[in-house]
Length: 427
Ligand SMILES: *Cc1c(COP(=O)(O)O)cnc(C)c1O
Figure 1 (tube, rainbow, N blue to C red):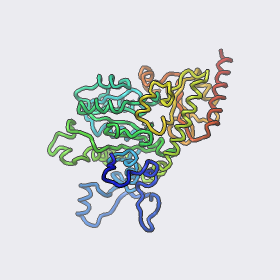
Figure 2: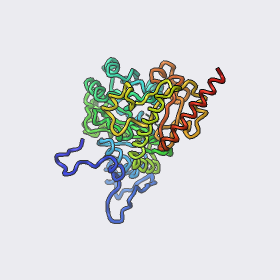
Figure 3: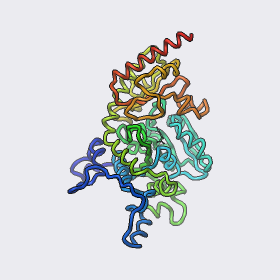
Figure 4: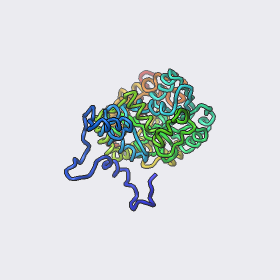
């Protein structure tokens, strides 16, 4: 996506962009992001106001656009290698907006089964209310291919699946979608805003994030984003190709991005607040530092757990024995993600015995957190769907924070030991 021939220096690296994009240079200009805690913006003349309401180039009202939110959007666009981003109030809002940007009543989505619970909820509960149906299929190109229908507008996958930590074969999913006039949407939350993976470079058309996770990074703020790349073909989608003028004729190459802002922010009002945008933009500045360390610690803990006699199975794509290791090597760089899942005999006594690690339903925090997906994040899904997502009654999902490896390993070791004693006493 970068044009190395025409520019003398290649595009700055991730870590450099993360701290500079969105902050202007100039004498006396603040070296940071101002929080523009402002609802409305003024105009000099009637013409100026009319022009802005047509073009949305600057600002009129913060439900639609705000300078602080805009600066965050610019940063995310750079980090994902995209062309445009709309930031929204949560990851859920981003997923919903991404789907509605290409689907309407009568349309169909093919989604892979290793989904964040909230995404599964949208597909199962909310989209049917609007006449949009979904097939949730195993995370393989064969299954995705077989599920495609003439009215399929969107293939939906997660870069690293939740919680099974399986890897989406992005290039092949993009080929399958494009061959049928559909687009590929990727929830790249676990890919860390382009740090571990940039799905647009593998053919994805839409990339979403829960910015609540690694972007915010400190468990302090909710947010979401939808980013689009330059190369997407919507000529086969009636939302874009029907009417006079068609949306493509009216909006040109930015039609998809325009519709996302129009839907998610303008019409539905799932808007990100300027203060939240500031916190997330600040989080992005250290994402690379945090996530690279979390990946390294996660790999060490995965190795430790894999050889532990009380751990039945460990799912982490960084392990050489992982069935997803080859795909992970193809699509991820800089690490294999900050999340691992493992199976213990007695999750209740294991979780109760943890002292440093916290039980909390979040990801990408500075603190290490565990959940029991069977009873929490995936608890509303039918049992068969839980198993299909890689969740069993014994599964523990752990999001690794920035604490010292030795403290985390010692805590897991003592909790496994305590859990074993409880089980022996009960047995
Ligand atoms: C958390 C999460 C979401 C939803 O994001 P919220 O900010 O909680 O609304 C979506 N996808 C993935 C992969 C997530 O981890």
